[in-house]
Image (cartoon, rainbow, N blue to C red; front, top):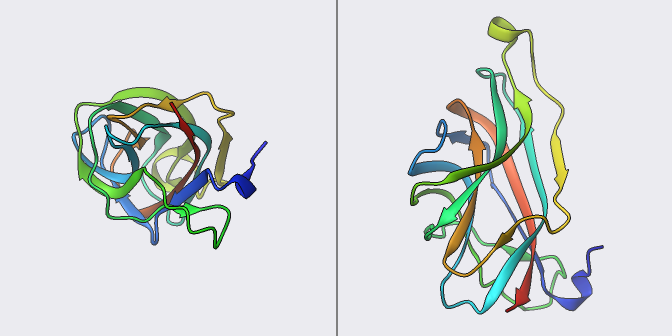
Length: 162
């Protein structure tokens, strides 16, 4: 159960549709969160979402992660709006990352022209604390195929002291 009144629940969302990089690329676009090595907290994942706004190539959506950092260009928000507590995590819609590993896939995207799939329903995955991002690590969205201005991602996590 979320406890945003504690001020420890944060989220980030792409602020516009994004293009994505295919597969386990180190020059990454999509949505990523990173836990700085000096943060003193673990990022405990609560939720991952993806919506498709334009028909694209057929592929899968998931999460990948690894050890390393991702420069932050997006601002995570505290889910207790107005609390003033700032996230220790950084977030980005595109960064150079260390070689990631695929963690899990959750859904598909597609194109009527190539696969019989049109726009897909949004993907909402309740992660129930099943992924932990320790200091010095990152988590990023994953697509099997490159997309062009078609997807919007979000992630929600708790920052828990180590």
